[in-house]
Length: 103
View 1 (cartoon, helix red, strand yellow):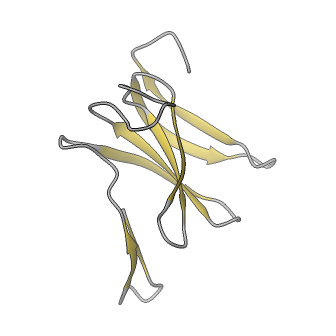
View 2 (cartoon, one colour; view 1 turned 180 degrees about the vertical axis):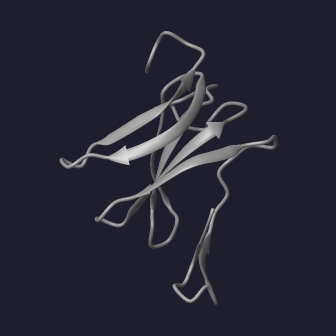
View 3 (tube, rainbow, N blue to C red; view 1 turned 180 degrees about the horizontal axis):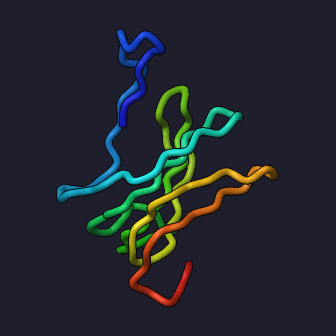
């Protein structure tokens, strides 16, 4: 993930979300409070967060000013394909799953 200035001339920040295998970002959503939501389509291996050990459909919330991690959550096995902010500040997550259980 990288953030560039409006003229695309300078790098604002850069961060890495992923493991040592192929990882895919399928969805991005930016909120008015300055946060960036990142929906991962493929995540291999465990996460270093108690929220989502060993899962593959993961949402990250980053501070859009510096790319720092605010939180991370999982919806289980599968792939996140779309993120949409709601009028009340919630986040809708859509995608595929290999599980009947949502965490």
